[in-house]
Image (cartoon, rainbow, N blue to C red; front, top):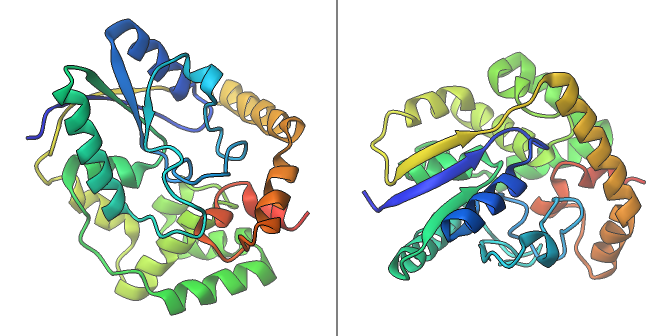
Amino acid sequence: MAGKIVIVAGPTATGKTGAAISLAKKHGAEVVSADSMQVYRGLDIGTAKPDLEERQGIPHHLIDVADPDEPFDTERYIRTADETIADIHGRGKRVIVAGGTGLYLRALLHGLQEGPKPDPALREELIIRAEKEGWPRLHRELEAVDPETAERLHPNDGVRIVRALEVVLASGVPMSTWHREHRFRPRRYEALFLVLNRPRADLVARIHRRADQMMEQGFLEEVRGLFAKGFGAELKPMQGLGYPACVNT
């Protein structure tokens, strides 16, 4: 076991970032992000990435470590997170892992999940279909073959919908089944889980407010700027929640 960490997890818009920063200030900790979109430079507004003012002087790691066209997978995340956590512990600091990407959290705690390798041809086919038919159509197809995974994914969450369909189509085994089996592996870290939640009505209202704030802050301009730099809709980060809608606006 590699050491002790605190994990702040929970659904979108529950306040994970603020909670992690408050804990870090109180306990002299540093924050390690477990968000698969915040690793990319230039994807700031759409990923609700905390800016320097919001971070309140607390060191944040695994944010802005890759360009949008640079490969960044779970294996790279674990390797970089392990090195970062070891460095923080080596300096006598506590570690708070904050994130909304369940795959990253599972991999950090239990190692890489066994399962089918990514299939670039199948992935490209699904993305092309989504561009023509819309992500909600593919989400409905996922509901038919893996309802458990589909239930926890937004109908426009392109990255996760594609991966879930890719897994079940390539292996015949739903992603939810892979995840259940993965939970039984020994933990790589001794972890205290703090899972945030809110009443559904409150959560929905907060999500709507966040969406409005993102548009006011210039989300559309952010996406157009990424396109102007040559980052196209076929890239993995450009398929994240919210980005496909802006791409087609």
